[in-house]
Image 1 (cartoon, helix red, strand yellow):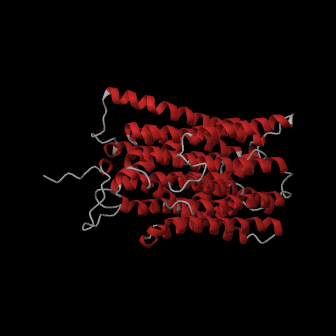
Image 2: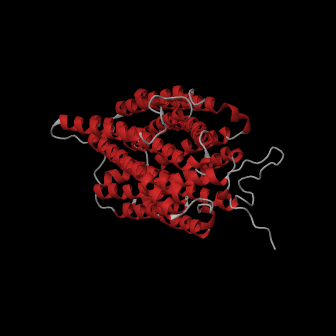
Image 3: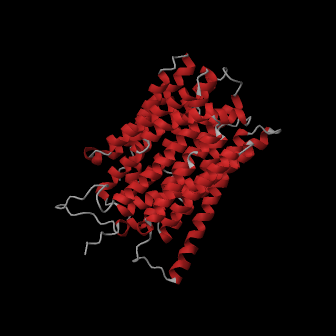
Length: 477
């Protein structure tokens, strides 16, 4: 009788010093690794493809001024879903939230492609955002359970590297679909990928199910539901507050004071609720895990707030095609992947805090170079160079933060910590896009007249990256 392979999600034991563990594609981990890489590939393709198509979407639905809301509303939904996924994963393991997330992600893509008005598109992106939040947190929990500590940096490096191919072909395919058929097919073409990933997860459901050693008695389940209720409500508060902040900051209401009241109220509610979901000391940038969370807020804020406007600037200010705009995004993903591979090398393991600071400084340098393009009317070829430098910086840092969040927390809290990490990630991206979107909505004058606006947006994002240099120096306990 063949020997039964151990369930990779039932153990997190660290191998002994004398037994070198098998790699992520070894017999014990191969199936889980393939499923996780397939999910990331699908998410990466959707992200890059939609970003490439968004200038055409905004023009077709008459929503150029509110361009940033498409990204911001999806991120608000991810905020809420991330909190729900953390409690769900701790109670039942990653199978249910992962499969539900894939289904919602596919449904949101179908609805987005069918949207005939801008509000309908926003609603569809909320559905897709809920799915994305469930997927990402359950993916992190699966990594924490499936792999020993010595393999996690390599796995996270592979996860980041899985963005390369879809990031290269995604913008090209999206540009071709947009220019030859319709931007709607950009959303629809990711649906088969979601269905394939869902089938793979369900086919291997045993490897994504909570181990039998977990107490599943009726009393335990009841206590788990009660304990999960508070964070879910707080997560809803963060999402609603962030949504109000994003909407109000980009709407020019008849009375200006209403805009300011709603903006401040929304941000205040989001921060108050988020404070109770993040590790104690996060808002004070306490050393260790709290500083990891602060860094995870600042990096996506700078990256997403800046990158969302690169295709729009290239198309409207320089008159480039959607294909050229998409290629500008490709080089950023390649730089990200190079950084992710570098951080996964064993020689960097004792210096992960330095990688965070180095990555933040590199990201800031790329953003300043990007801001110089419209400010000083530099050639278009400078844009991909700047975006590649930005990608290298964030690639060095993002996987490091993922590894540190698991290393600095016990295995039983990986669900909660992964949810907090994704909460910081999505909240940072939402705030970054909301601020840059508000600046664009307030200062937008028309195609070919917004060079100074883009320069100001990217310089502000560079300031966020500079703050991440400080938080990166405080992750070492």
